[in-house]
Image (cartoon, protein in one colour):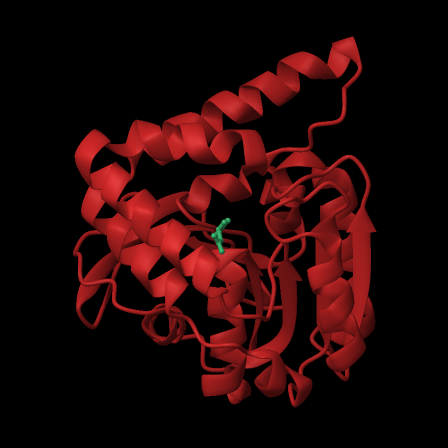
Amino acid sequence: MSDEPAPSPSVHPVAIPGCRLAVHTAGRGLPLLLLHGFPLDHSMWVAQAPLSDHVRLIAPDMRGFGGSAGAGLESIEQLADDAVALLDALHIAGPAVVCGLSMGGYVAQHVATRHPDRVAALVLVDTKLEADTPEARQARSDLSGKVGRIGQTILAEAMIPRLLAQSPVEPEARPRRDAIETRLRQTIVAQRVPTIQAALAALGSRPDMTAAMARCAAPTLLVVGAEDVITPPSCLQAAATIMPRASLLIVPGAGHMTPLEQPDVFNEAVLEFLRQQVPQRPHPA
Ligand code: MLT
């Protein structure tokens, strides 16, 4: 896909206006930007490492999360502009594939609407197009208050039971599932309280994207875990009916963290989608 030398897998700082992002990169060729969910960081994409045999993975910790310095998270739109500033800083002028999970999916939608020329294709995972209901906004505000009083542990307690598929797993699969849960807990409690609170406010005030995404020209893969209780399959089934170039995959045995829970299914679906939809195809392993 490219004559550039393959950079070694690493996390390195990248300066963009207003902050310094910690960015994991691996592989070369077609850029695949991976935007994490809330309240996580780039490490949620650990199981997508094999994709770096085919594409150039770029997985930032978004403003204020993980190893990214600087507070000032104001809106989902701002995070979308940060993502494009990151592409600029990495001298990626051509369109990239933009993949986001949940909050990262909200950000990816704004990248597509604010910077359509920078998007070769979208992968929207365990996310939705609609804004929060008033009740959901109030629940975020209540949670933000609790996090301020009690700390990040209350957020981990609130979220962990809802992140992963709850159907019983085979005994041999149990250790892997427990390890995923432990890793998610560690990631959540490592996030900074001001970032968590700012992100909750930004999530609560994000606009409804339904009309905008009905006009989205980018080929789009929609992926959702069959057991996702945060953004259930009905959300992406609705998106698939209105987005002109969208296809939908519902993944059995996954909840809200499909790329972590069912990485082989997810990775193969992404590669197949890119082979079919993106002219600058992923190069063979
Ligand atoms: C996420 O996983 O990013 C969040 O659950 C998104 C949300 O709360 O809307």
